[in-house]
Image (cartoon, rainbow, N blue to C red; front, top):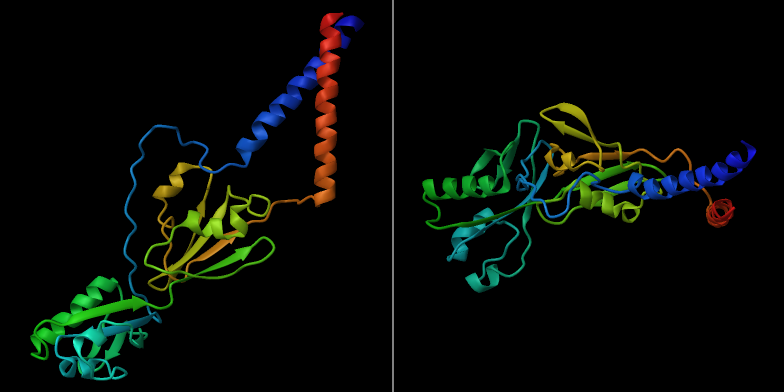
Length: 260
């Protein structure tokens, strides 16, 4: 019986170490349940909708600079070629009623509209009132930003463009390193229509693509829980060294047991 125990103990230790070495990388990975060479539906990014206190930059252009000038009080009267070059755009803040006060046109309700819808709204108003036959309206969101908190720090991300998703945000947090981020439970806090809602997302599951917060909106807050512990670099190196030596020792003991 003692001989049997001496045979099985090293072998059991070898199996345990092998299991740990095989499972550890998977516990740290993203999108673990996605299969290779399998198609998954990809929904397009929804267009951002304006909220109260959003800041918009809007510019009106036309073939006749004198006609569009009243809608761009910061623009000088120039020819069309110069207008299409980069020029200042007026900034508007969406008030508590969801309106902006636009030159000549007055108050326009823009809350809940996309940028394209706002451009079309202003163009239609200009045309219907007989100011310009074919105006060109450009609108941009100035405050597309995401707040990140958790772990050892945080900050505010300024987003360029009209689309930004949770994977891109996590990639910006220390390069998406799992040393800091508990990717099994990332929280996104979103405020819509005066209601604040918290969503929990598991970055290891492909279900995150269907989450309502996969595509982020302006003023979303991302909270990532820190790991329960973090080893210093010397301690981590020492544990790795011990693990390697233990693995080799287990292999040698197993081999000796089998040969006996």
